[in-house]
Length: 98
Image 1: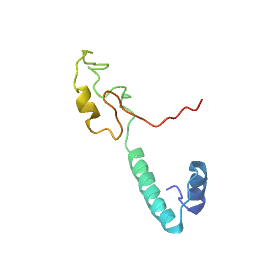
Image 2: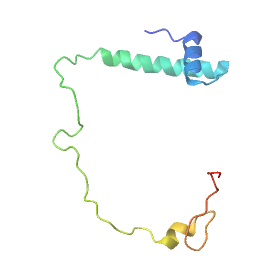
Image 3: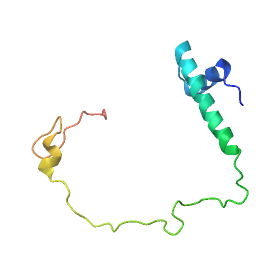
Image 4: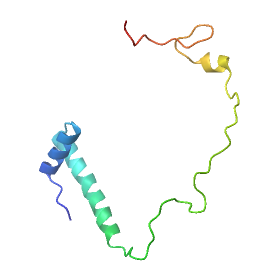
């Protein structure tokens, strides 16, 4: 089994720009050990005669519905729960400065 220790967790924390205290490191260590154990268990399976899976449903792929224009929500319904609105539009904070 791959050794999951504080050095590895510190390295992962550095890569992800996260900071963990000792209690969180212990939880992460336990979780990573479970994940590694799961993959080691999977690697025991004989997959030599298994074809690679490209699609879950080999017979059906790229099945799309027809793109039919329709009004599912009225303007009044869309604006009903808006925190800021006027009679016809959503109001949002200005994000572009001139």
